Length: 152
Length: 104
Length: 293
Image 1: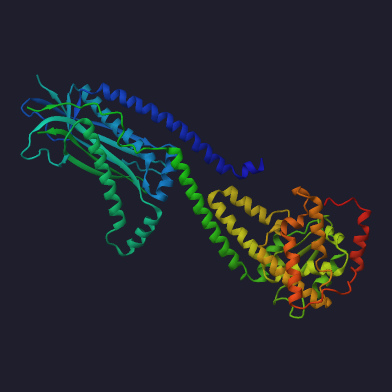
Image 2: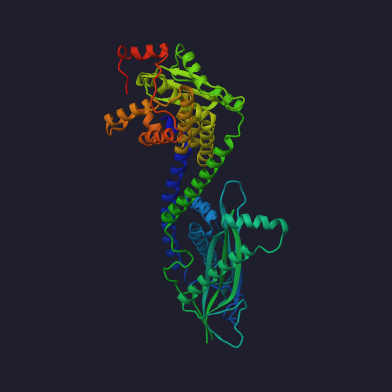
């Protein structure tokens, strides 16, 4: 019991690490599955980073659409990132996190466009910013663009 | 693969638009580089180590974007944009995106 | 006229580096561990070197707070103290250094030196020897450790380890510190390096030669320990404590003989009997419960 108390901080650390790893892993897998499903679902809304639609002659109704998501890392990813920042190099634990988040923001933007009956989004731009706050590792990703609804 | 940050390739006609492609990578600098950089901070000037690191990372992000464009069947990416953002203390994301197209 | 579409991208995730999270995590943890270990070693060497510059009064203050002799007994202490003083030799101890010899009734056959000039002789040791010469050798050995500031060097090394460990985990750091300065008077289990032991042996033999004019009987205690160890065989828990803290007795006896021959100290001579107070302890050994060793 004594030794257990002496190393309580290490044990708490290990438990958090394990919980973070398992929960984060399950969540990531589920999220990727959902992303792939919705990407297929929203396939007919096309997105471009060009300022103008491929066909300028057709009349469109334009409106601004936006999709945003705030993601935070799990405990395991955070500790791994801390280690990467000592040794340098590619922070693999965050790459998948941001990839997921960015695709999620695009999907939300597409969803907003679909609700407006739009068939394409042009001039898509992205923005990433760190959410300020002590002890919270969170990043906001925004995707925004102009949704175009063909006018019959 | 043609990359431009304008919306046309002069003299070429876009046959097909394939939508958005993106490439990103997250990089951390190591402690040794941090220490050297903080020393360099005293006198100012270019932080060569960081320039190199970010350039290399940006190249990788571009390369990933190109791979996605290739997978979509494109032969050019128009309107390419870069963005660099800090994710946490010591880690930065390099992000490149553009519109994949097929040109003649 | 150009057409447009958003083809479904293949399942390959180009933006996610090929990732084995657990593997790279453990590789980095191992790397960090190696870094910490290297830091600890450097710090320990550094602390060991600078600890010897600590004034002896500071060492005594540390000892006064943390050192408690195990199961002390007052009566033979004066005799041991007198014998120790006589072994200091004509050049004496460095200025400000004092010796305090303690006697412990614990049956372990051992002697120890720790910070603040504290030496402890255990009952088991007194029972294992048959002459003052053998006891003098052991005492002089411990005095030599103190003269060379070996205990405080070990303490410095241990504290450096505690500091590094506390950077890893507060619990681990305080566990190391507790073990060092623990309530059980663990100051006496500070280990010494092999070169420190060899130096103490050489100094002790010289002190014995000066005091008695010969080195006969000086190795008695070591021989006795060796005999017991070989009797005990390979069973680790029955090996005398002395052998665990002072390794390679064979080697030491051999080196002592070489040194005596080189310095032309007489190997033969009349043994001085144990002082009466200690002889009484030795005589009483049969009547008490047999020692655990």
